[in-house]
Length: 130
Image (tube, rainbow, N blue to C red; front, side, top):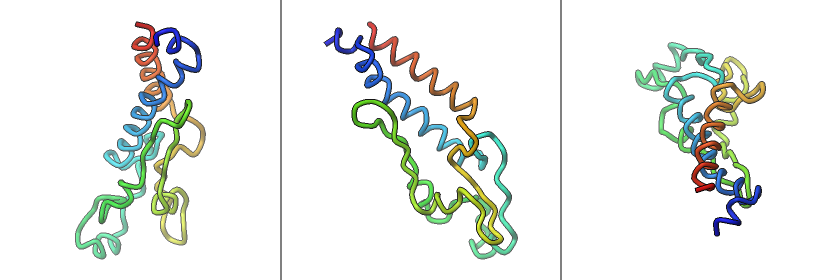
């Protein structure tokens, strides 16, 4: 009912799916741009890695498993849950000679994520208040 959707908890629940999509899009952007959440380019692959990958120069992509292991979903109740699989967790920080290639924010919420979330929340609130 409309009255329930106008209650703050109802609005938060209505916004969660839209926010999850916005965050999922930002996670996708990291792969598409080969940058971290703040727009800093990932360290290029070493020549030995490209050779091992048979000429594939796309960072964090060989089988598609890393990309498939990340997504954001609306949490039960209200909120958003970000799911990142083991392969991506491994790349959040450096290891041996391998540099970090983080997908998740490390130093707080990036401005671009904040803006995407605000846009999603505003749109969801407009829909809920109609």
